Amino acid sequence: MRIILLSIMLLMSAAHAETAADVIKIKNAYVRATPPGQSVTAAFMQLNNQGKQQHKLVDADSDVAAMVQLHKSANENGVMTMRHVSSIKLMPGKSRALKPGGYHIMMMSLKQALAPGDTVPVTLHFADNTEIKLTIPVQAINGSQQS
Amino acid sequence: MSKLRSTLGIFLIAMVAMTGGFFLRQYIANKQFNPEQLQATVFPNARPLPEFRLDSSLGKTLSNKDIKGQWTFMFFGYTYCPDICPTAMSTFQQMLSYIPQDKKPRVVFVSVDPKRDTPERLREYLAYFNKDFIGLTGSKQELSKLTDKLGIVYLKVPMKDVPDPDKNYLIDHTGAVILLDPNGDEYALWGSSHNAATLADEYQKIVAHSTFKGAV
Image (cartoon, rainbow over all chains, first blue to last red; front, side, top):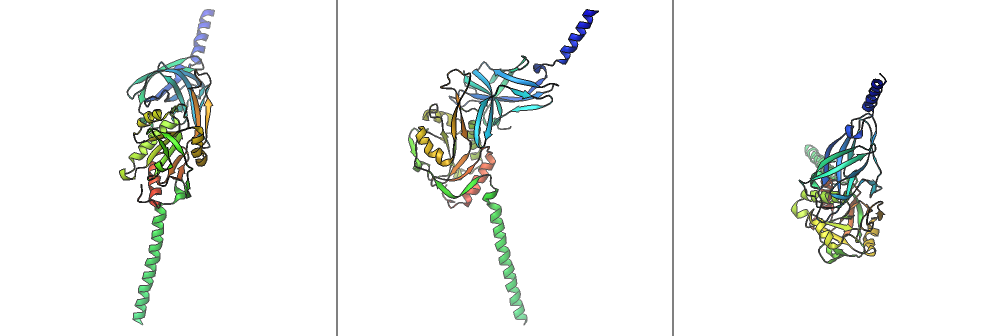
């Protein structure tokens, strides 16, 4: 009897503790194609938290880049800035856009040129130690103007 | 008496027509061009640039005389930048597609990162967007002649936790788009956040209203 109760409790707690990997849905992901000689690029996407708790994107990595960081571009009194951020909060029921001029996944020391039509593997890491593996299409810079 | 009346009538009609014509012309002129309604800041008097000499993607040194004779869009940035600068270059490329062939301005990208952006690197980078885009860069001292006058600020920002911090760093920079007139003087500017259609539209209005109408 005790074992049954314990299993029920475990099941219930498991059902309650949603994971980021389960409830974060990714839409419209793309990586910017690189001009010749360019060793950096950025990945953009919509992250929709369909869960009931806040989650945090804390890191990302990709086989095509030696370094990947979460960055935020901002316009501070006319000066364009870009900074490494330690995490990106994802509020329950809300979408967060990683888009030009704002949050993005900065991919540095690229190991190869990226052309439209290529795809890039990117893994997103969340604060609860879960991850989402994506295969993201590369888009021409012109084709990625929609924000 | 009736002759006087008809003369008076004609006179009145003429007055009304003239006054109406005057206001109509004012109205059309205002509708076509009102600098206050532009996103651009148009200077009441164009501001001459100081003498500069910068290395260019064309493989030679360029100075003030080389940017004369045509309207020029000037933007400051660096090629290592993955977000703002490629967006701006692509916006300029798109803007040009909205402007008739005989009115297309020149586009100049000034790199504030001479350490990584060699003239050859600039040529390679800019050709990806448009082979006619010109890249300029030079020593900090030479760059500062332009940036000081144009109110452009830039600041190297080291990145943490990266190998080879000498090669991997960011630069904060003013995002303004500067419009130089065919004399090579600063004529107008747009703050950051630019839209290709707005730039094309306002550029053509500014040019049409300037004293350089013929010379583009």
